[in-house]
Length: 126
Image 1 (cartoon, one colour):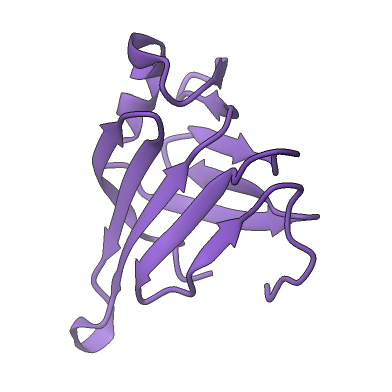
Image 2 (cartoon, helix red, strand yellow; image 1 turned 180 degrees about the vertical axis):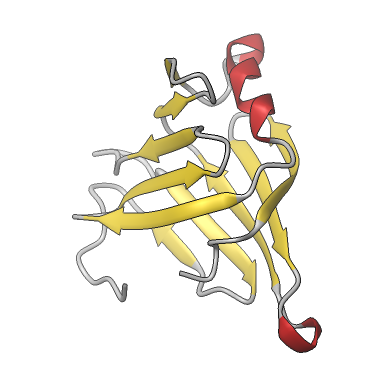
């Protein structure tokens, strides 16, 4: 997947969690993408401690700041849209489809845009 090797260059919080991902590819063609998490997700910090987090909960989201500058090692989408990301420092996150709300979006250049809507998505190109 095109996101492997990108780095987290910005993290922002509001009622969503935003991760700006960037890499420079051959010939200057790289990836500039934003991953937006909208529903509760599981975050594993670099020490292996797991945190159940919910966007919009303020200071409770502080563990996610540890992703700043980190590089994505693996990215996978399973089932109806469960996104799993592992980072080179051992951190990771997992967000599953929500039955009522859009759970996550990916948009930008150098990638295919994805929105996982309520209940998940049935057609995936891996």
